[in-house]
Length: 350
Image 1 (tube, rainbow, N blue to C red):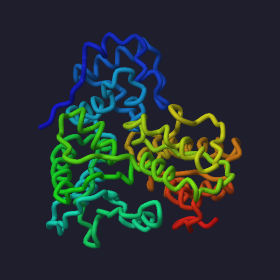
Image 2 (image 1 turned 60 degrees about the vertical axis):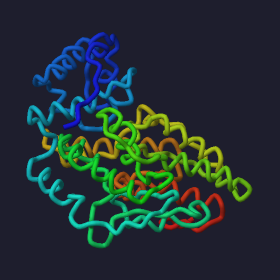
Image 3 (image 1 turned 90 degrees about the vertical axis):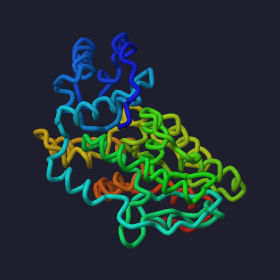
């Protein structure tokens, strides 16, 4: 079993306790936060373990890269304080076993986009933006060979990730990719933040999709025609695991002539889509999720957003109807980039 690197001494010496004090969903002052983090470190019951909405935010708020959220998940599992009902947890885990059958391995010896579990969105990986790029994805038999498994952080299930993630890494490495471009932030966070925190070896070079898009757009700069749109960006929870890549949102917007509207719930103050909160067993979770969704969309509308840009398909599916009701068009970032170079978007009609 892999062990989490966590600097207990540095955590206990932290005066601001920003990981908990800055939480969007818990209301703790510094004194309370210090008491609760001590309990969590000592593997004792803390109401934080029960009330955590698993938004990953504390990973970004920590000033020392000390992985407080991974510690919370570890204690949830060890103390059996699980965020979701046990039947839901077991069903999800049993459905996504990645090693039923063997994938057909074809050596690529080039860059690949890893679609993880989102094979239905593979049509996005087309056109000038992705010339010379191969795709690895689940096949029609629903084999989860490329699933990073990191979603089980929402389930209090480190043990599942530890059992499966190394095998996923081994499978991908057999294709001999030069670069693995992660379609989803969760995969990038798995292979960078999570693997580093637990000492899991990654056998390939990992590239964030937004960084790839930005660099490719620079190469195609002569084709760019400014879109002149006002946009809000729906930041997914997994983006908190790679906050250094979040800057590419505005860099892409600037490059393609999209204005990022000024609003309350943005960057570190972003609200999650609420999807995982809806399925949690703590009291009032569905009501909380609906409240978050309403506040988030109203904030975009008030700021004058014409479009809401997504990287995460789960966020997209959760919020799209609410956005359309407010005349805000949901758009995948890749489709937005396609439109900027004169190509037809796949899931969006201009």
